Length: 216
Image (cartoon, rainbow, N blue to C red):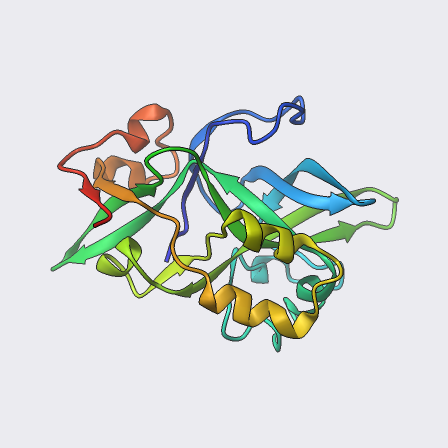
């Protein structure tokens, strides 16, 4: 399961002015999300740690939701029905256990980015200010991610993205969509374990430290 993302390519021409490319995004940082607003696709920054407005213990914020249970968990149920988003990324990281150590791998498409299924919320304060937050959705791993871990972020095709974002999509159809989605990852390679620290930044976080593995 991935707790680190790379988001260094602008997913749309009009991104928020304060967005900066990131090669080693960790939960608690801000990232770009795509969501529908007024029938149009908008790109906004959101905190990667879902904080519903009713949440009082912010240290309980979740950065991921399991597709198998997302419809029944109070933390995610309302966002699933009303506030779905896409987290556009260049790739994500998974750590492979190798005895007592863990080797990080960077997973991506050979061309183009990945669209991760996400949920978003708005946390409102008494003074009228607010922030938006999000969590990515995970599922049992398939394809290349399954060689490294039991879980993976849910990555969606263009058709699946449209269904995920559409307000007309029945809530009962969302969980099968998530669980049936195939992995969109087509290549992966090991990277320097130094990127395991969220303080390590820059393009070197995604640079290969060994041979790449391609989808058969």
